[in-house]
Length: 313
Length: 305
Image (cartoon, rainbow over all chains, first blue to last red; front, side, top):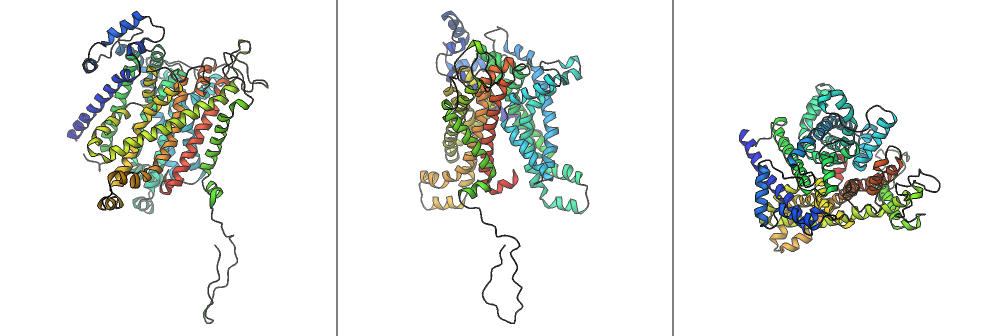
């Protein structure tokens, strides 16, 4: 087991290195002078020169990548062009709201989507099933910011149940934090719920046709325990896989959700960086998010062995 | 079921009396209309999509005015008889912008679907057939897939000037790995098929095997994947434009109209509402088409998903 964990961690290293190389190279793949691209349209020639010097464009590409990569390994993501602050510091300031939003969404989505999928599979072909499938298709089709505005307009503006926008740090109390974050979490979670519910339903449909389920039924096991103990356990691997893959949706969606609800997180940092063409910040955020995504999927791989003893590495 | 009178029966055998046709004979659903009735999801999705195509194509003749015409005198009007969907902050007619916006969304959606499919197909076929390249290509694809697609598109767009063409390229790059991986998977499983072995044994050259025996079998899963890519590309385009990293602000696109309405959403929600409805309907149409296509092309999957 330990050997497997170590081996699995080692295999993520080349992937991370490639991501780093790719993120670093983006600036040079883009057409035109990188310094001019970063400086933008309103920059003076002096600005372009300053950026050119800070990028070290006069030295070979691989040397520059090596230096940059070495600094990243030491936890230095460079300096923001606009604010002149270290990128790591900017990210550290903004990480709490984004992390809160994503964790709350994850918990909320999984606890709604999995039962939804199970019930849909159990009641396959009935109106309950059709409603869940319909919801899933709809969830995939309505863009995340549309859901956000719809919810904010109804529950915050018209019904006045929760604050319209903003973020309350968790240090100021759990309830205010939750009240501020619940709408964004539902917004961000909709696609995710649709995705997980759909896979749960499909896998459960398969599992429920197995012989051992019929055996369990014939010996009189209660319906709930058939569904949630016997069947769901065996459907767990694909469901957990999709929960991991879906984190990519959460990351992409967080950028948009944060801008709808004015949450001062990493998404807002990215947006501001785009508008100011602050490339080191964009680079840093993409790298951090990708890193998180790889780690989540690494964790998922390790969870497999816990939920399914048949999987041995 | 009909009970058909069979050949004459020997007299001494008891014969069941002929049953009346309690159940009317069911006509098999054949032809084009039969196909449409058997696949309601394709019918509804296709119909909705046709309407959107019609809107995109005939936008200038649908009672629209110049979608970029600015008039400060009629800013942020609510929907009325004169301005069906109201006007935005610069006094542009939202109805006209929404109608013209169909062009950008459909163009981006379909271009990305086609480009990403073709590129992914080539990479997938190559990776599935050329053993020494497979390892390298798959590592690169693993790496690209560990960057969330929207983030990758954002990073690419941050580096280039906003234009429809660049948006298409950025989203295509973000979508290629998924197609390549799908095609490679299909190729690897097809390679083990006996008929491919037979073709190899018969001395068929590799290009012939790829184009004759492998390629046609990848097309069904590919076309389903292409519809999903089309749907996701339209959403990503709207997101990019919404956050200011997409098509130029003056261009009427659904994402841009919603970006315009962002500052005013509490007092003038209709600016966001109308493009949102059109965008959601179009994406829904493409998704339904994809689901229907998947069920029609792979009946085994139909029962499961």
